[in-house]
Length: 244
Length: 352
Image (cartoon, rainbow over all chains, first blue to last red; front, top):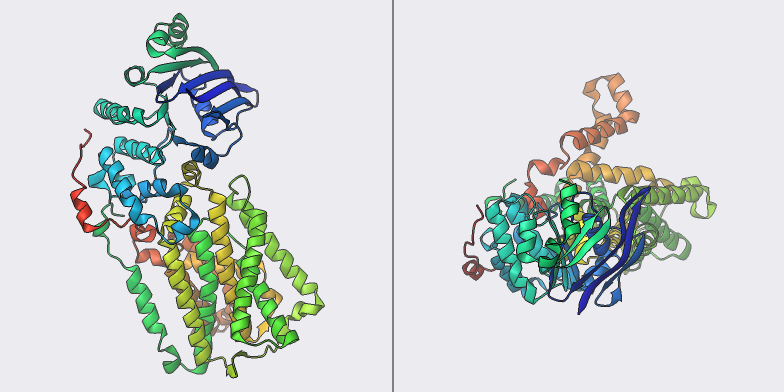
C-alpha cells in the first residue's frame, strides 16, 4: 500500500527551479533512498515533504491524506517525523531530557503543566536510550556526545512518536565507518514499525539498507524503482558520471 | 559548564531561601521609609518575574509588560475612586483578570497565528501597543489625563484598612512568594521542558508536533496576569496611577531589571529589581562625589543605569546570577529517573 505519494512536486526559488514535477511513492514498511548528485534537489524535496519548505506546485499525500499545505506540527500528528541534515538536538539539555521532550510532544498542555506523563514515559525513554546505545550517557548534556551519538540521539527522537514515515536527511554524514555500520544495524529493526525515506550521499550505505530508490538529477526524477534495478539503470550511471 | 549532572552544585535554592530569610524580618529592623522601599521592590519583582517568564523562558521579547501593569492599575484605581470598591479580595483578582485578558488580546494579535512570530515582530508590536495606550491615557481626561488618578483610598480586607507599611509589605511579599513558587513549578515541569526546547531550537521542536505559538501565547497570557497583579498592588501602594506606569519607559526598565539580574532563573529578576532600585535611589545621594557630580546624578542617573545595562549585555549576558549559578543549573534537569533505573542503564556499545 502507498504510504507517501508525491505527485508533480515543483519548487521554485526566484529564477531557480530546484525541483521540477517530481513523482515518488514510498510503500508501507519500505526503506526508500533518495539519491542524486550535489544540487540535484534531494534536500529540497525532503524539505517540501516535511513541511520545512512549501512546494510551489504539486501534491504530497500521507496515507491518502493531502498534506501539501500542512504545517510541520500537523504533519507530525499525521505520522511523519524528520531528522535534519544538520544535527538539531538540544545541546544544553541532558540526553534523557532530549528524548522526553520528543516523546511528550503529543501530550496535552494540561498534562505537561502538571507533569503527569513524566513517570509513564520513563520506561519508553529508557527503552529508546538502550536501543540506541545511549543509556549509560543519559544524564550527560547532549552537546557532549560524539557526533555519531548525536545523530543516533536525533534518530531516536524522530522515532519516539512511532511515526508511520521517518525522513532522514544524511544520517551518516561525518560518521566513522564503524559508526556508519552501527547506524545501519540500528535502523534495520524499525522496518517492522515504519517506512523510511532517506537522503544520503553514501551509496554503499543506501544500497545496503534500501529496498527501493529514487534518483534525482537537476531537479527531475531520472529513475525510480527497486534498488537493484535502479543501480543498473543507464540514466542513473550517466547522471553520476556526468557529475564526476 | 559540566556535562555530568551530579557534579554541579545546586546554588539556586540556597539563594532563594537566603533572600526569603533576609526579607522576612525587614519591617522589624528597618524604618518606615525603607519598609515602603522594600514593599515597592516586592511589587516590582512581580513585574520583573512576568518579564523573565516571557523572555527568559519563552524567548518572547515583550516591551508591553508595563501595558498590563498600568492598565490593571488604572482599572482598579477607577473601581476604587468611581465605585468605592476597596476590597483587596475584589481588586486584586480584578487586576489579575485585566492583565490576563489584555495579554491574551495582545497575544492574539502578535503571537497566535499560522507561523511562529519573530522576536522583532513581537517586540515592536508590544512596544507600539504600550506607547499607544500611554498616549491615550495622557489625553483622556476621564482617567486623569497627564495627572493620572491620585489620592487612591486604602485597600481593605473586610473592615480592616491596609496601611502602607508592615502589613502591606507582608501582603506583597506573600503574593510574590506564592507567585514565585507557582512560576517555578511551571518552568520546572514538563511544560518548562517545552519552553527550554523553544528557547534552544524553536524551529526544530515544531517538527515534533509542538504548536510553538500556543505555548508562547499561554506563557505571555500568564505573564500578563502576573503583571496585572503587580500593577494593582503598585497603584494602591503608591496611592497613585499615571500614564508613566503604562509606557515603554517602565517596560524598558523591567528589561533592565531582568537582564542585569540574570534572565531565565526567576531569582535573578528579583535580585535585579532590588539592586537597580537601590542604585537608582543611592546615586543622587552620593554627596561625597562632589557637588557637580551629585547634581548630574540627580537627573542623569538613568544614563548610569543605561551604561550598566550595556556593560551587562556585552560582558555578562547571563547577568549577576551567572556569577553564582552554572549554565547547567540554569537550564535545569527535567527527567527524574529513580535509583533502580541505574540497572537499566548498562553501558552500551561505544562507537569508535
